[in-house]
Image (cartoon, rainbow, N blue to C red; front, side, top):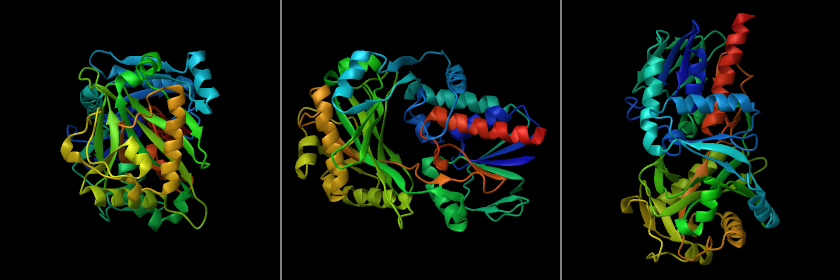
Amino acid sequence: MNIAVIGFGAAAIGFIEKMKDSDHQIHVFEQSKDIYSSSISGIRADGKLFISRDMGGDIDIDLELQRKLVDFWISKTNTNSVDKGNSFNNSQWYQKFYDQGFDPVTAEFMHIGTDQLKQVLYNIFEDFKSYSNVHFHFGFKVEDIHVDKQYIQLNKDEKLKYESAVVSVGRSGHRLVNNMITNYPELVKDNTRMDLGIRYELPDHVVQELNTEMYEFKVKYKSKTGYMVRTFCNNPSGYVVTENYGDFATVNGHANRKQKSLNTNFAILTTVELTEPFNDPVGYGSHIAKLTNLLAGKDKVILQTYDHFKRSKRTKSLYRVKSTMPDEQYIMGDINLAFPRRIIESIIDFIENLDQVVPGVAYPDNLVYAPEIKFYSNKMDNEKYENLKFIGDCSGATRSIIYASAHGHLVAEDLLAKKAE
């Protein structure tokens, strides 16, 4: 069987790793010009690998498979050297957060480090391309997918017909997924949720004890607005960066194993669930991102001190906490001009309560960046078409490297099992 894989990210890597020893011909289409310039956001900007049943996606992934995939990623480093830890393995910390109304998320984690990831991706690529049935097509942007019972056609090109296709474009592939939804609305199972929030930056010393204990802390909190708020992607001694989606820019964070800053950053995300007739969470999130970029300037995000964020006052200068983001990537302003008030209130409520557990989290000169948006809300139906599957974050089923890799692995496993019948 000739199979087209659209996008070379974590999910595609899980899929190809399982399929590479089969007799299927795998054609990988990646819009980046080569492996060195490929921008796999969830991998390049983070590099955290989690083993947990409580985070990473909305599908059930066996812990043994998660551990197997963690070992796979670590095996692609040159030194097998990673940071390790456990979130809320300490019952005292668990109790502290629980008593303040938080829901602590337990997980085992490994952190490769952003500075190692370029080599990791290259090593994976070198392994895959050594197989005669795996073919890479870099610098190829898929903008249209036509679905027929007999074949899948890319970009309306008669020469690009495949018996099956796997879409693994991640969050940054929202344009292609939106196009698919427009042409095949039956593919959507659920599209009423999205995560909208901020990237928060504060001095290492404020959260040093927490970072030392578990490195990555993840908690959920039901705010007074009724919205569920959560932390995501904690980066001790890390850096805040922008993430470009093509038509708008958002904020993200990462950490290196060698080069360190004096600040910790993490996301604070509010889960928004809307009801009918709402059916476009990506469009809603994109609109807010574009509005934020409009205020900040093209490809820039907004930076604000926490005190000004609370008081809806534009920030004009910083005090003790200095930004780790390059000056040309942000403008100091007022996030309140772009975000719905209920989102702002939810985030403030979260930070004020977090300060009760970790004093100093609500210092007035801590930094707030916006927008941080996670597009995983469109739940795609992989049962509608036998020859078309969505895997990883673009499917709405995952939101982590390991869950995305596992999703690709499981779809490949199912395909191989059906062929063997």
